[in-house]
Image (cartoon, rainbow, N blue to C red; front, side):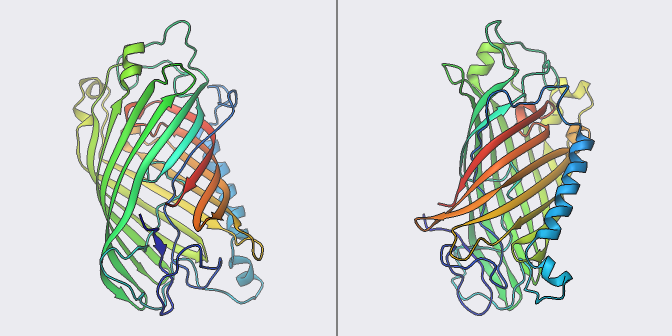
Length: 372
């Protein structure tokens, strides 16, 4: 598979990521994140030490403010230095084929764990530490199995493929793509490597950019499936977590490789709300909101590593608007003509696994992402 390029305005064809200098004016986005997560057993937060959603959100705002002051281009503007075009600012139409153009107007958010990507990961999670029974009747683990501090492997296989660009202007353009992905978790400390569950997504994204502004509109389907081994071991019942929805995100480039974004989702049809157990709880699945921030800092001259920071915040009606915060910090690496990201991840909020969407979860992890 050929590597996806970033749109580099300026009248020339977009260069491959390995050939494009960092911090170049008019740089148009970043490649999709693909992830892998690892943490030490014992670092998982207990219910007493788990950060409260409000405290986590306050900390995220503080991190965002500090990163904003340090982001490339912002400091120069404040001190009267020369400014450079912000991330996503287009100055000329790219000259390449309209079919499978190999470039994105709206790169997938790095910190959003639900985005399709390629990933291999290990996480330490407290998903099963609290008593179960929010999404389904209560289930329990065997007496010899302590799931309170669970180390899980994560496999994420997905793609974000640009398909057709009907419009390309001197300030941006419009293109249609295709996304598909599967996210699976396994209890790797167990000899049988029990599968916890898998989440699937299929989407048709419409991306657009004009100057510093960019956006994405998607028609998508999500579904989730409980792992057979987990069901056999614990007696957990599978729920029908599935919906079709339209979501939209709009981003503004603050500086090269720095952007803020916000948007929301409207659910067209949700099978989840027809679950008898969830009907009794009054669960509704109609809408959600999302916002985030991303920044990368150019590395030293000739260096192949550049630090980066990403934050993503979401709330959904199906979780009674509980805060969901995901953060990632690390470095972007180049090797053998490919790009990789090594990230320290943190997550706190209702689990992103559809089969446990009402269960609170916290984890720390180490993630490796790769563009292939």
